[in-house]
Length: 373
Image (cartoon, rainbow, N blue to C red):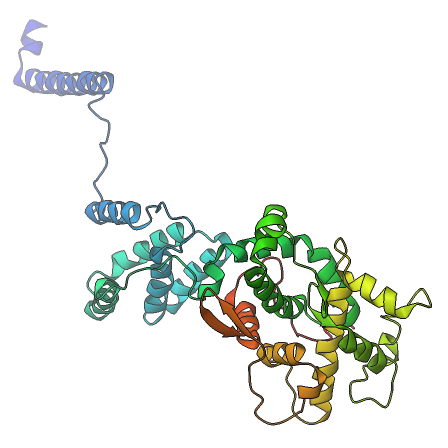
């Protein structure tokens, strides 16, 4: 038996298998120890673009820092739109996705991150990079001084802030008149602006004593009446044209009763409802009807002025005698001195209408006239 186990045909295979099993045992033990000491945990591969992502983070955090002046629009927000426009020249599909996300979320910061994610694949596109570089350089070259005031100087006076507060209180009243007459609220207010700014500036004592502390509109009670400054003769003519089908200012039977009286003393009732300090409804109603009457007059003469708020305001200021339809009407009206600088009534109305001021209160309508009647 001993001779058998000493045979080379037995010893060699025996030691071979013993060696193999020993190696396997050592391997299993090593694996176990590696698991125990977390030596097999994969640390992960650093992305080839890791440095790019870090650059994005740094630029992203710096590019959208908030300024103390919250009233100004940060120029960085415009960078997003410009970069999307550049990207659209090369990859319109990606640009469309980013623009859609921006329109939906209104988050310029996230949109810029989306742009930078795409730009990772444009790092070797010299033409694209050149366009971006050119834009970035233009931003800082000859950078103009930013003026935080309105470019319309008369909107920087303290009286303007008082007016905005006061007219906001009348929003429901103005909108009600707009719905009844089919005249856009913002157009009505554009005529109110010139009259009120003129009064604020000329009635300094009244402004300091009553108007500013109470944030109310100035109501005229001599020669012209109400917050829109309607003259008595003009008021009578407005009423007369409403009921006269043969008048060039006639609006139609549906408007005839808008200014009907409740008493027989029409003169007193007319003045009383215009100078009512608590209810400015009729001041706005007379103004809206006048605007629409001259609009109809010019339209019938072949010279539509629907899209000329400055002309409509000028005519409101100068009255019927000056409302002569023609090809090239002039902007003007009363001269209004505001802190030693003279403005015309029509110009002030025009500047307000297109300024964007109070736009959230009195926005543009699809049409200035008859959008709902």
